[in-house]
Amino acid sequence: MFKINKVFKKPHYLTLQQNNLQEAQKEKNALPAIPNGLWIKCKHCGETIYNKDFNANHKVCTACGHHYRMNARERIDLIMDTGTFKEINTDLKTVNPLDFEGYEEKIADTIKKADIAEAVVTGYGKIHGNDSVIAVMDSNFMMGSMGSVVGEKITRAFEFATAKSKPVIVFAASGGARMQEGILSLMQMAKTSAAAARHDRAGELYVTVLTDPTTGGVTASFAMLGDIILAEPGALIGFAGKRVGEQTIGQKLPEGFQTAEFLIDHGFIDKIVTRDNLKLTLSRLIKLHYS
Image (cartoon, rainbow, N blue to C red):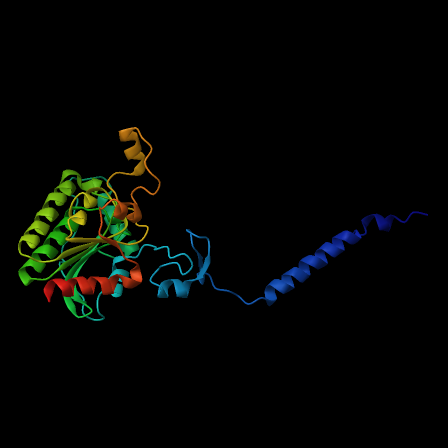
């Protein structure tokens, strides 16, 4: 006789499935908890890198050598002798001269997120004991765009170096002129270039280090005026984007166009320097000029 209670009995395979899930959960709980942020995956080669090693290597992939972007403070710590850097022109603040809608709010929000007052930090200190004035652009601040304050700070850095007979080192990183300031932003191209020319006439050294990315009005002005132009490996360097260039000339541009490697092959820059050799290279250039 058929027993009705068998109809409601759980199938055997469900019991096995539940047991497997319970065992899997036990194994998962037994594994050591790994905090987030310990590892990163290189977007260039796909290798998984221990985050501590990555930072100790100055944000360069330990597997393939890809140079990731650094902020201004990290570059200053990398290049300047410990405790020697003194920032200048910290009182300059960005305003909204054209009453561009939302610009003031965007500036305030970016200051909080990037933890920096503007897209460039200027100051002076020593590089392996050699006096130098530096300007370090930061792509975290509105893509390093050049507005009135950025242009003014770079111009004043040149003027300070000229008065003190010191070299200028500029780390360029920019998406170009800042559109919210219109023609006032474009005027900074001429102003910074004129300051660089006066520094040159005084017989002082000017070295530019082009980092990823260096584009637009910054490329078309002070970034390409250095007595010696260095670049980091793989850095994007150009004026307009590759797609705009192809549309303008109606031709396909070469592979690797607007990279540091392409530019050195065509004589636009003097040397590609890896990040671990950059401080020594700069100190040697300064010593050669001022000894």
